[in-house]
Structure formats: C-alpha cells, structure tokens
Length: 154
Image (tube, rainbow, N blue to C red; front, side, top):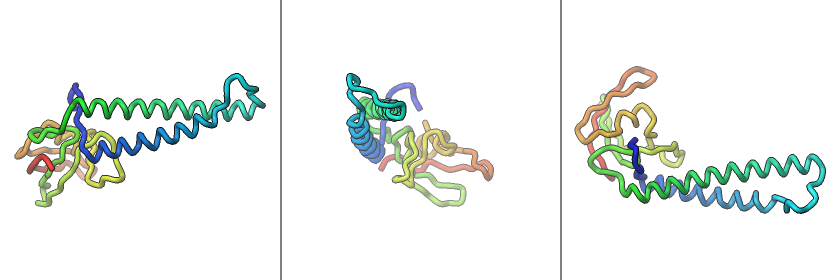
C-alpha cells in the first residue's frame, strides 16, 4: 500500500456503499430507542440498557465514519492503475501448476467476492507494486509458492 489515497474497485465500492446504507439504517433504529436525557432514567436495568444502546450507537458512528472516509479517499485516488498492482487492481496470475486465476486486490475480506485477495495476505503482499510479467514468491502453510503476473485490468 502507498502513503497516499488508495483506489478501490467498483465491486468493493458497491460493497462499502451497501454496508454504509445498512449501518445508517441500524444506527437510526438504535437512535430511535434512546431516551430523552431530560426524562426520568428509570431503574438500573433501564439505565444499563440505555448505556448499552449508547455504546452500540457510538460503535456504529465510528464504523460509518471509517467507511465514509474510505469512500472519500477512493474518490480522490481515482481508478486503479493498469500498470502496477495496487489496492483495487484486478490481476490475472499464473501459478506454478499452470493454472490461471483472476483476482481482485482489496483491503477487506468480502464473502460476496470469492476472487478477492486482501492486500495484507501473503499473495496480496507479493503482488502489490508488481507489473505484468513479474514473478512473485509468497508463503503458504504448505511452503513457498510462486506465480507470474499475466495481466492487470478488467
């Protein structure tokens, strides 16, 4: 990863926007259950429940802020490079056994994207900064593996 804003793939952007919408809806539901601070707080169980919902609201606010920041950063970064592998890149790699696979380099694991390789995984780290034709070596539980970057882009 670079020190500047990182681009993001269209699929990852849609996933972030979907998560953001879900978090905002959940936050609205939680906020609607919080009492007016000027009203009687009730018994200790009511106070504990209120504190728990307040903590949940704060957790949701933090995650919403993180996602909004990532979306803003991606907008500044522009489209992923088609010359050098980075976060947001789509990369076709050929493995030692001759098999090829097209993967998406992302920041966060996404169950909806089986081709996603996170940028902090062994393969993801090996691919970052590489270009078509480069050979990469990375560690797996079964030992070191290698692959060749065949191409970048969709």
